[in-house]
Image (cartoon, rainbow, N blue to C red; front, side, top):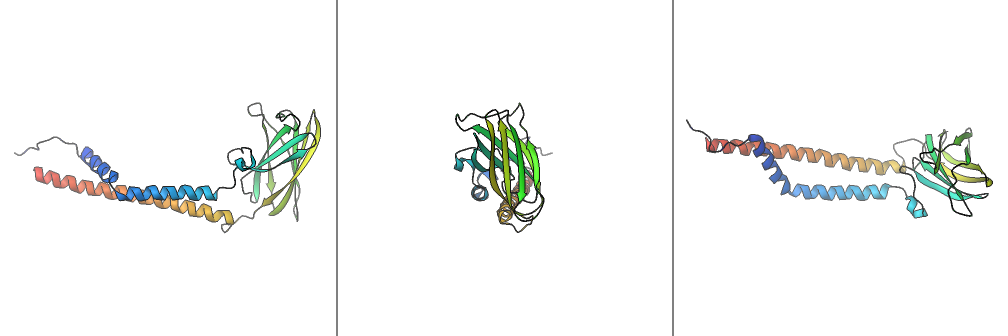
Length: 218
């Protein structure tokens, strides 16, 4: 009775062959190029970062504007970075214009009014002891177009108001921002599917080699 010369686990052979196949495959280099392309596209698709304005925005937010309101410097951030119909979140940062220090005990309110039609929206913005820097709130922007957002601040320094404009886009798959998002999603999905297909094909190839080795040793 013939016995195999070596007791080799078939799983080890399969994994080893797959590893060798993948490490030498030109396909991996192609995946690296694809990943780099995805990264570049995502960078181009991202809106201008807050660093362009000398400040750093909250993750997922965009600095809409920063201006003087009485004794205060008022910075307004918005999320999503490209507002669409529905709920938009706002973050307000209040500074003492004279000293540049943050003010953590102010009373902050927002009043947003559409330029054309629709009802004005009002809300208070509140901060927390965990993160007193930003006063947070949200508004339901029901119509597209330009909105005027009035930020009112009251503190021990006095009162101040700043008015900033906000463009709200209609919902739709054909929007300018959606094209980049769909292209990026398509590239990521394609690379994922191709990667799985390559691993499956390599595994099948490795199994065939293992069967050949078993027949040769038999």
